[in-house]
Image (cartoon, rainbow, N blue to C red; front, side, top):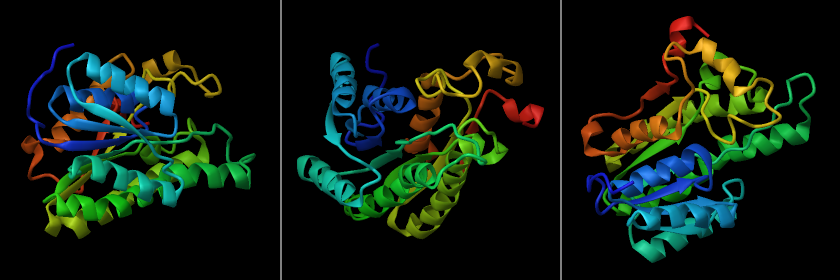
Length: 256
């Protein structure tokens, strides 16, 4: 696919979890529209593969190791990005861990693992990116929650659902606090998607089982999510902050 536009020219975007799935699609979308993308992930090999895909399209990207559940590593990674680019204007908080155990059998260890990555990891990245984004003159942050946060779906278990609900609240807090610094913060809640996570072999339901609950008659593709993210980090949404956007093919029409 050729470059789409230069609407993000001059931007440096950090995408956490960029090694696969929705976050890889988002990284590609931002790069296709002019941003230089730091593809951050704990999986270095797959992050480099995302970079290769971006380079193959004539766009700019580089990989950076980041374990969002480790505050020291998050601090190091953001300094590495800043030292390399001198600017950070976009952050996509997409890194996530999922376990499918129900509340009745969820262990303390599983709870702590998922919450540390899916919620505490967002806190770490927000805390560390703030001074760099402020010193860049402002920026845009999109946090990736889930439709499970609103519906209480058991798809991802209690730890995942609770963490993603916390992401929405954390976004609203940051949006309110940082508006004076020209930093906009929004959240998206994707529904089930055609990604490795959506197709996870341990998931309690298969991907095709969800289609009957989606008025549009299909699950989301990464491009469906990436297009909304592009809008939220572009000038077209310049008067938007603190909102949560559902991206689920109209599933809320059915009330579940």
